[in-house]
Image 1 (cartoon, rainbow, N blue to C red):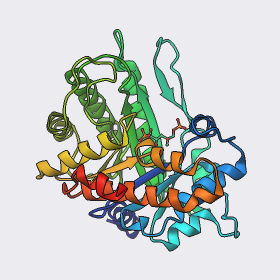
Image 2: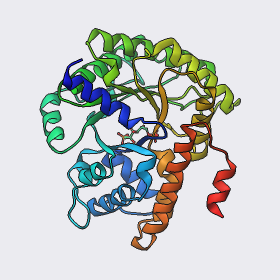
Image 3: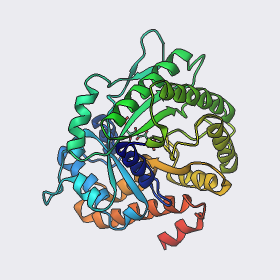
Image 4: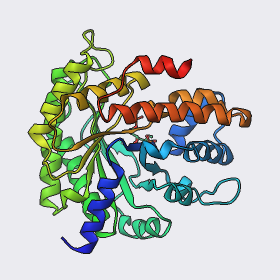
Length: 343
Ligand code: 5MM
């Protein structure tokens, strides 16, 4: 491996070091607006900065958080005291990352399906992000399960874009996080989720191979294999863990250093319990970790409520959630620990 390759492989390993995972704080402007609406806070640039500053300056969170994914605006922001947020992270030995996709848009000729855009001028944008301190990237593809979908056309278009993005990221000195998200919306059962996730991951790794992406310099951010939100039969954590690992073993090469699950609409508790169950199975060739957005932030957001007076209390809530997921990385989390923290 070249020095460049070795450095990227080491960065990937550092992000998913035992006990650590990723905080996905890369909500785009429309998404963070939605999140703030739930706590009646206006989405101003200053409120967004204050909130992210709260998360990134939580003392001790770096025991459990190896990387944070930022949105473009956040990578350019500084704390109230004028320190760039990316520097706050780097100084805490947390790797700053950046979402580089431009969102999922309607796929031409495919009713109800989406393709992620953002490849135009990506090389130039990456050069700037590197100067601003980011060292890993993220690109999210969205696959919807529904009547007659997903089509192979949709999966292949998204997989090819993920490959192009990943190859460019590696070239420009970033560890690419490859995120093909099979949504949990709908009423399909866990086996349907298994089949679609397996089909998707096959195409994704074919596309990465075709585009010469060195897998040991990448991370995968998939959905867990779950029953859909409105499915009348909800699979429990043991079934979720067994089916998710089986699906990944069928599709993901062992040279990928880590798998960082998205939470995708699970509650904080579900996401922790499921990750814990996966790590209890053991014998996986990859680190099984987290890259949660909502499942790391929901209670913190509530505790903050947009009030400066609540910052310390909200930091405690965030530290607790990060710690619970850190324990789930070892399979040593127990639900009773939630009560201990409350006491
Ligand atoms: C944090 O949300 C990320 C950005 O979403 P938008 O581009 O829609 O604003 C999102 O990609 C996130 O990283 C993943 O979906 C995982 O987050 P969850 O909340 O599903 O764990």
